[in-house]
Image (cartoon, rainbow, N blue to C red):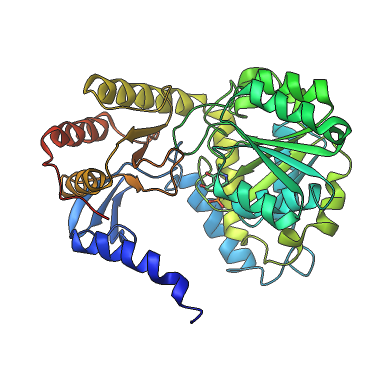
Length: 399
Ligand SMILES: Cc1ncc(COP(=O)(O)O)c(C=O)c1O
């Protein structure tokens, strides 16, 4: 018996992939050619799996702001927000986020993952209950486990199941936190937020919405699904990340609850990790300004998303339930998924392959993410690469 025994299953799963002649886990982006083209395995490749929804990672304003902050404030804060890592830039970004969402308060965390677990563990501990949609991201599952609250899953987007579970809780609904996502990260579908807010109000629970994939993507102003659904006043906490439409790294929570400020004193993931670097904060502030002032980026993103979704659908691929910047091709067979992913890469298109158990229904996905920054030619290249999959030979079964 050894502490390393537990690694055997993952080691043999990796060996399976290697036997298949594919290096899926550590694909290296060797050099950038343009924001959505890079050299991978020595080949010019379209990046069709990034979460760079508004295409801002190479935006000149964002780069200028980051360089200026690097020069003025150095490479890192070398401390947490609680201890010498709280700079004027963090506070300014919090003010700007609160204003953008028309909320009383905002907190900036070091990553989106940290924002979710930082908020969930502070809000729901022993004696409390968390109810989450079963399709929620791993960070939300971790937020449940780390805080010590009782946690219950409801069936994906099944409002009757959510209500049934709330009803069973009786008086405990008053200290229940419901957590859903704006756009679900695997299949790209939206939460049924109007119905969820109705149920939440009926039972007196609290609601947290993770808008990681919907910030900058949904809503007239780009505030996400709560804005699009017209229910912002009924959402207690909105959490988001800087690592997708804002093109950097970091996370945040906004809320009208006055207790938000106290989270800073009790949330271990806020207290015990270094704060985001000044350059990251500066580029995020510049990106937020662009998100607010250039709605045409959102229009372009949706144009590309609808086009790719329709083209793949017309080719006969089984996709998520609605057009979205996350477009997942659902496959039944792991071997076929690996062979298809490899062929896409050989055709110069890099998408994310998601294998069980990371997927929602135990089947593999080829997950594309579309951006406002993809050119029509790049979208066409993605379509053509998928069209070439029609003749991928059936692979030998994998274990
Ligand atoms: C729904 C959701 N929440 C949170 C996160 C974590 O965000 P980050 O990668 O910025 O830490 C992700 C990351 O993919 C996500 O998909």
